[in-house]
Image 1: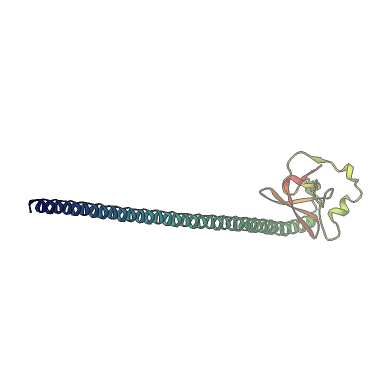
Image 2: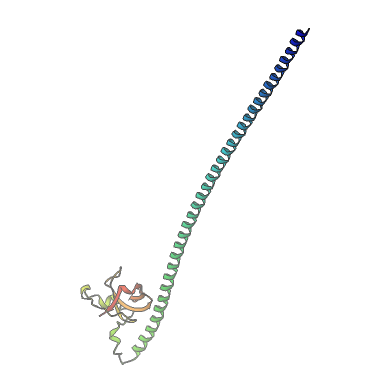
Length: 216
């Protein structure tokens, strides 16, 4: 009986030890499973973070591309506006220059007409007077039958002499350049760098001062 009890006790101890060993194995298995699950969760979390970072990077790149495209479009629009403004300014300057030229020509013509009227009155008065003006020979006298061309028609071009003295109103002048080069006339008016010259009884020309000289 004692031997049986001892054997039973020994068997019970073995069973208890086996149970404890099984419990420990179960605990280890559970711990291992928890670790695997935790590692898997960490892996998923890491993958999610990587995916999120990639998405953010892609979104940032797209935003930068859009910003660059918008900046390029704005620069192109600004350049186009600057070009349009430059062209408008050029057109305005050209229009102002034409307007100024027209105003100058009109002013000179008005002066010329006024001078012609005064000249006609003076010519009429001198015609009624028997005394001749000593200076009248310096300025060719014009009438409907006598023009600048007829006064100088027999004078060869090479014989037309001119002075370096700047001409004044009523001075006989020679055209030095332009389509009327070689022709002569009388200076009727001056405005800035432009003059009006009478080439014939019915012909008035607006010419740059540098293109005329006093006739000797």
